[in-house]
Length: 521
Image (cartoon, rainbow, N blue to C red):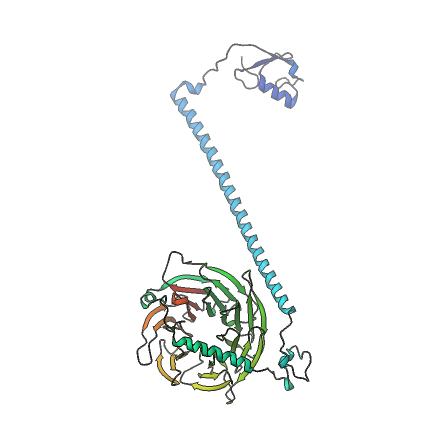
């Protein structure tokens, strides 16, 4: 007999006292638990109404499909189809789970980015607030007796009769400090020998791009200047996006992004001692940034002595003073620790050109400035007098670099590069690497005075010789930015690499590839 519910022979049969129907025990018990009545007659039914029937071992009859080979093949086919359908369903569930996981990870990453940006904005706001609350350093010697407090928001040590800025001047103690530094450096230079670790010509000839680092914003691309702190192998870049970036080259990590200028950054300079960085900007200001133990840099001073774009900043060899040069036709000599402008120098000859570049001589007693009128002026720092003028360039003098030997000066302008012998105050060699429409934007001696880099529509490396010998071009690097305008170039420690900035947002490093060199960041 068959179960009244399943229609199959029951394994554990029971019979109803009321209806006399046969059921599979597990099936009828489940039905009674759910509905409390007979599934066939609909009468109320309880477990007490069921009587178990004892039978011998029941062998289920073979299904009809299994009685023949075609029937068995059909069964196998049905089972295979069911297995495939089940597998397909599992794959769909896995795909859905992966999509949900990917979406969750994307949301997590986006949240982390937002949190990082908010933290950065919070830190910048705290830095600006701290700067605003910090009292600006005032030199007591610079306050005229008849001036008190502030006038129109300007520092009281900068105002005098008629609104002209007054400065304390370079004292005899400072001049003595500069003179002692000059004597010590000059003595060392006489005994100077080229480092045995300096990259040889053969190595530089084999240099190629080993890394590229996108630092600055894509909506305002362009690196205008760069500098390298040799003791730590840090690179600072200034950009059109109004930011300066400090980059740790060995690790390939950005240490800090300095925001605060309201226009493009025109020049960046490390102070070799004291964890300081100087930035100048087209917003007419210079900022002094002080490094901290956590790797961040905070704005220590904002200097507003110029009335036009500040084009260049250069640090004295004592690391205690620096000079800025501006399109307003003046250069300022500052005390680094206090941010005080000790003197502001204008050309008394009556010329009205602005300054576009500036650099200290390695010994620190003279300074060179380039002008918008294609002139190069050499100044005596002690008495702030113009002691020499070099003419012959076409267009603004874009860059100035003194050789470490103390004798050679390289200047760059629209017409190329000129080399000057400071002993005879004469031009002894010219380079015109580009056509008349392509200016030379940067020129730089390496720290040893053995190589000279020239940048315009490409980068060219020359081997330094003497006045009479030929200066050979040993390597030319193409401008990989695609802009056709390389803006700045700098040799790394011992010329082991060359850092290049262009009018895109990338800092590029040229050198010999090695296994531990970071390629991208």
